Picture 1 (cartoon, rainbow, N blue to C red):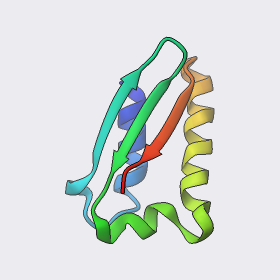
Picture 2 (cartoon, one colour):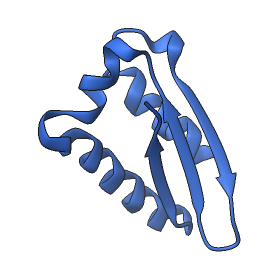
Picture 3 (cartoon, helix red, strand yellow):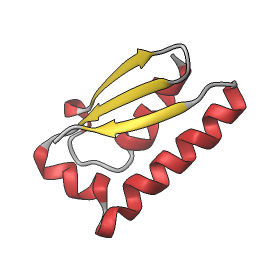
Picture 4 (tube, rainbow, N blue to C red):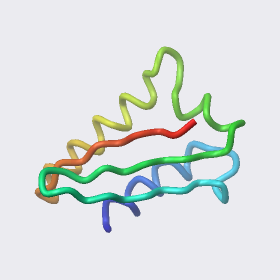
Length: 78
């Protein structure tokens, strides 16, 4: 569950309402899916202009996954 803590750390430092962060972890035989939910007011911070921020977070998670020998993917709930 290190990947959940890692994502929590990243998101907490971006949003204004860290108490509304919810992360679910689902492990499959091929990869781990992390599902992220934040407050509506913080959604624009997470997505970023043109999706740049969320794509960067996904890239960081993939690199972190290489370090811990897991395939990670991130899904953001509206």
